[in-house]
Amino acid sequence: AAPFPMHATLSATSTRVVASAASRASLGATRAAANAATKPVPPTVARRSVFLASGMAPLLRLAGASSAVSYASAASARGASNSSSEIAKVLLDPKYPEVFPFGEKEMQRYDESSDFMFYAQPRFVKHIDDDAIGALTKYYKEVFPAVPTDGDDKVALLDVCSSWISHYPEGYEASANLRVSGLGMNEDELKKNPILSDYAVRDLNEDPTLPYEDNTFDVVTNAVSVDYLTKPLEMMKEVNRVLKPGGLAVMSFSNRCFPTKAVSVWTATGDLDHIWIVGAYFHFAGGFEGLAAEDISPKPGKTDPMYVVFARKEA
Image 1: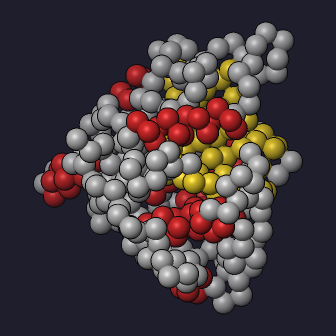
Image 2: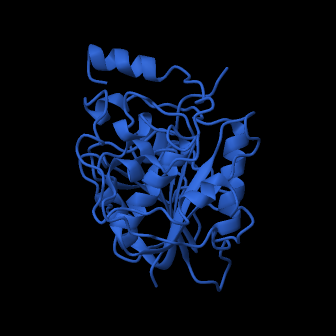
């Protein structure tokens, strides 16, 4: 059977931060929408970009970059091995406009009912296939700081829009020198996540702030959930705030989703446009450097695709 649409996303209305065991939709139409959304959604076929298929500029360049700004960046924090790929090229010269190009219309969703209700039922499923998960885990292993041992500086990781699984590499779990925090929608799912030292339950579409101190984390991740954020600019500013100087932010995504809960600009566009869109979140949030993208799809055309957009907080 096809995998479920995407990572269980965002978070519930509470703002509690809870010690984990490891370190331990509204009624009627909403229920029907939720039931429909949990059915497998086939990968988008041959839809790399609705605008780039014939070599045209990305969607939002056409949509209104009157005084576009060139924002060049390194092709990859791990080197330039993939710099020639379509995905990496999108952010080499994205020509973003002077102001954030997304408004209320672009952030609308088909189902505007309570996210708390939609995600109230825990989903202990994987939302991308095992090959895509393996590719993401491998990428994390290459870019995460080493697991600290006795005498090393402490390391702190934050998984935003977390769930019962974070796809982190083996060894990256709560310990005396390693903090792994999770912020997500469903408390039952977060309680089951075996690597977390603590978790917070919050609806980022209601309150996009992160309940952590400034300069706390070495890495912030968001796995296959960025397409559900209706206040992405505010959230990315918070990601920047809680990162340590030089800390890494990684937004990963595939082409699966709960379509009724993804924002309209996402469902109307393709993979290459999604790179441009997520890059815009970093760019307009400010305070990041080295903005880049990479295609880490394990078996293109045969398994779920996997993409990462990443940058570091300015030192």
